[in-house]
Amino acid sequence: MTNSTITVDVVFNLFSFIIDTISFFVCLILLCAIIYRFIEIKYKHGQLRIDIPLILTINIICSILIKSTLQAVHVTIPTLIKDFQIMTYFQETSFSRFRAYILWSVVGVLYWSYTLLAFFRFTRVIYSTKRWLHRSSLYLYILIPCQYIFGFINMLPLLVIFKSLHLIPDEGYCGVSFTELYPTFYVTIMNYMLPMSIISIFYVCIFRKMRETTAIRQEQELDRRDYIVIRRMLFTIATLSTLSIPYTIVYILSIITNQNGSIFYRIQWFSASLCSCLFSLTLPLINTQLSSFLRSNRLTPVNHQA
Image 1 (cartoon, rainbow, N blue to C red):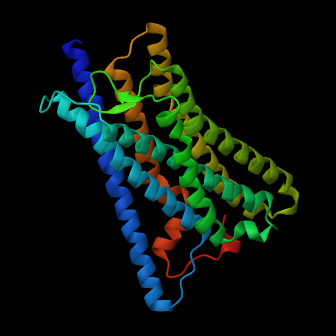
Image 2 (spheres, helix red, strand yellow; image 1 turned 90 degrees about the vertical axis):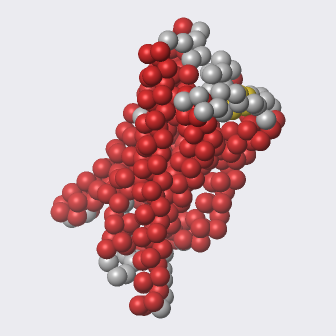
Image 3 (cartoon, rainbow, N blue to C red; image 1 turned 45 degrees about the vertical axis):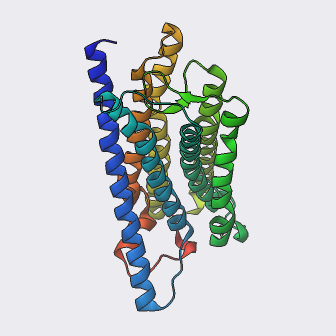
């Protein structure tokens, strides 16, 4: 490995650490602000009604917070320690493999949290008369726990079937090597392609439904709501898709060139960090319920959610 390659590897890792740190503190600030507003509203009004979009937003914030922390602890910090030769020898242990399993599971949980938010918007538009689909208890006590259970069960094959979580060459952590095709395909499909496909299907259905109801809605309201909903849809799909391009490119290059260098893994985790950071920074902008909740003295009723 040349000095220039080492320098590029270190730069990617440093940027990943900085971005993960930003994501962590942004999510922590948002979470603290939400908790403060909960306490304030409870103290002033005595009753607190939490809307579903806010519940799902908190779910995403917590997922990003956990994912950023785990990535920093399991991937970024050990690799920085190795890069700066503070410690050059890392041993593969059962605990390090288990940490890798937890990290990949949480990555899946994060993408499924985006899917759950898309599902809510889908049911709000397509099945607006199905009241049981719009109950906060359904999401809080059933769907969100199932999201975590599903995410962790999804990654169990990495431990018990493929047994593919091993120490990455020239890195300081365990993970899925690009040279192992079946585990890599499995992780890509279950953690990214499947939730992204479902999100896209949901938003296509929402868009088609919105077009069908154009004639029976007031023009001013239609323009405003269309703009908000379409902006959310496009941002979600574009962000998740665009930030996966570097990972896809380096993975294809690793297959073509038959190389498995550190740079591929650095770009992979850098893309993951950038995606989390971008979502955490823009959550108040794309989620009107969150920004309204942090500003106003009351929660918007569920029936009026966009």
